[in-house]
Image (cartoon, rainbow, N blue to C red):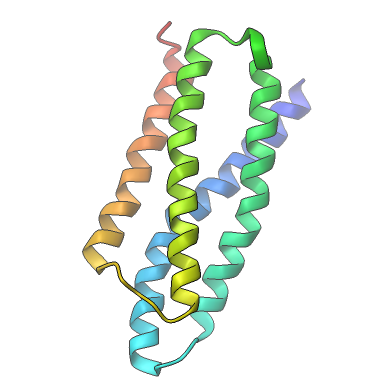
Length: 136
């Protein structure tokens, strides 16, 4: 079971890197696109980071469910799962922005992307609080 925990933590760290970095990278990609008028290296890097971390997120979710005991999970794990579900929605939303950016469509403002980025930080803090405190 320790190996499952190690794999889970490694994959969570990788997935979180993308959750924190991709919205910020979209800001710089948007600026690069405005300057160059075409798809540049920041876009390629952002897409690669998003794709790579998608696999890590899936592994993190699978190992997390395994560690949680699937059906016999304590109540705090259900709360953690609900919060992680919010992060999954955030990640999918980010992916939609990446796909639009790939087509040269940057609808979101820099301010929106900054706030969107910070929301994920608060969600992760909530997940960590639940895991450490185990409120019920």
